[in-house]
Length: 102
Ligand code: FES
Image (cartoon, rainbow, N blue to C red; front, side, top):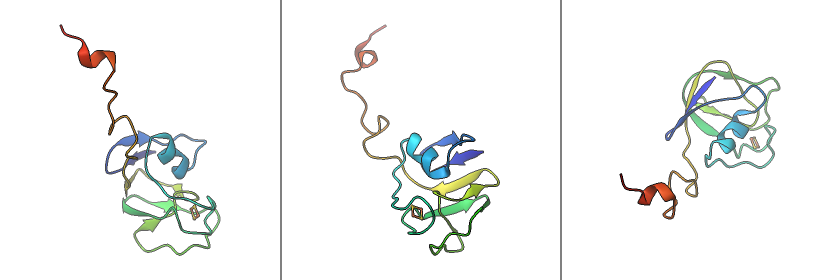
């Protein structure tokens, strides 16, 4: 499944949850229980469909998903941003290629 956020598109791996995929790709996402109880990870869904193998206890609005426990059925577009400490936001000023000339 392709996951598109506000900042990038990535492929969700078969063995990871959407929350794990967002973490792996440097996204800022809150969490506590990681199992559908607290609602901390709640994100706005722009397009796509998910289901829940186990009905979560946390409240979910009509256009919201819980990335810790949802199962994407289609490609998704969600509102989520990269962490501010990712290389995309903080380029390495001492990286060799920044100083290379042709
Ligand atoms: S982290 Fe608690 S519901 Fe997702």
